[in-house]
Length: 234
Image: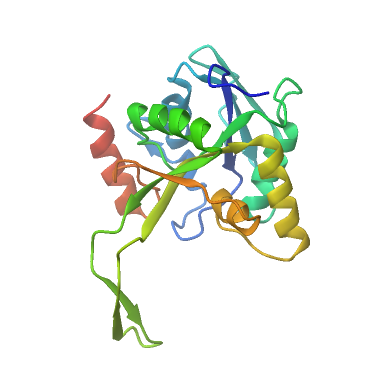
């Protein structure tokens, strides 16, 4: 049975092309502060003592992986090959984890394109997630929220109370998350994150507030912002 003292593996889906970013090189390999973006992401995760290893899920056509086998003394496996959707890649990564990771053990899932994860947020997620049966980093919505029509005209102002932006990492037990993702696939539901799969299974994951600068690189402007943020912490 998993306990708070157990170390955790982290699945990092990195099989996407980042179509909204554009360009030939997938965004997770673009240079950030002089090194591939994904290396910053992996180092942020591996820096925490509770992390045992990282499972990076790559595309079958990936020619850019830098061949890293270890970070901060933690093994980095890249034997898992991703699928067409993020959920497919995460499921592949979960199945490829070492046999030492039991179904009852917690695992993390973190976006390859989130290189600005804060150490203290990761630590809080691990502690609170273990105590609640599963959790995710998130931030409450603070801006006024608008609903648009097909012409991008504002037609309604929506309540922002009880609305959060989902971030990563997300943390669930290996067996429960695997079953939830398999069930969603069988039902033909495309889940956009792990918490959605768990919600569909009747679970109510804990929302752990994290820093808003845990940004996901989606556009060139995001990359410049990430470089600025990293300069403050490198």
